[in-house]
Length: 476
Image: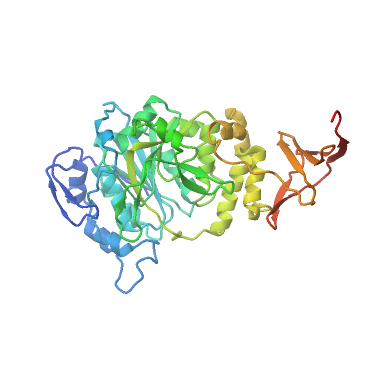
């Protein structure tokens, strides 16, 4: 259902409780945002104690069962705990425009712990200039208890949308973005805590170039103790050919070039949970691929699309947001976790990776033959936007991604292969001896070769016909 925004809290007076990183020790700071004063009091009608007590952990229960993190520890920590400023000290000297655009903050969730969901929202209200929050749009993805979201509309700036069936993160985020009216969209996960001055650096970069998609450094909130731990600022997003996301260190050369630790970091891919994007640019680029299901792979699709269609991705060291990282998903995937991830990443590979998708199938053979739905609309979108090739992406954005050989030989001969992949033809030359070589051409228009790993060897499985020629070398 819909939610309302209350204006009782637009002032910025009061005092804020400040404690240690776990929120259980500390002193008082003589300052509290109006949003915080309202959310803790009765003027906005939100009863925090009642909201949290309705679904508390019960002694004797496993505190990890429901949410895949320590629910008991999360509920011990105040909803407005103080955090250590984890930015480089140089960040405090930076200044940002006074007329930055307000943003719609979109938070989607399905059966989220009330303690973490509330702490996410209150960290935004407490650590964000009130004029920069246009609204906070909660999208409840058909949680078991509809009051998880509805009751939170009594907090300032909060709106609530509830799906009538389970849609997943991707379609839920699109619903939230469609409901947003601010010129900038901010996407957050539902188990985060934003840190001091997190938003102005992100908005500043968007204002300077609306085709940028910017992400904070993602600090770590322990799933066991809920301690807030600073992450390295020398990381960027990376991946392997199976489309498995990983954090990777900046090269020593890149670190040497970065004389200013506040400079943005170009990244080939974002983690996907937390980022800021101009709303019109988000819509122009095709939002998300809404045929993807539940969760997983959408960060590859949007990252490839942004880079290949004229935008860029950045991580900003002077913006910090903590995130609870879990070892498993606490919710059910209707088609299974692995099958859903394969479907989503296969859609990504088929639309955006051109013939380099063969590397994906080689690294993830279980994807072969799995249904991935109709991609014609996304292919047409790519043509309409005149997006660049995946080869351009590899050459200009992620040259560090090593390209594996397409096939190997095990004939016992001293052989060398040279393989080339073009838009319509796979060409291979196999040197059998200094005077003899095998020339191979395979059309890619109607059938696609598939790499089948077997006993450590990638075998090339082909359908249809190919031109195979044995030739003598001349002028040796």
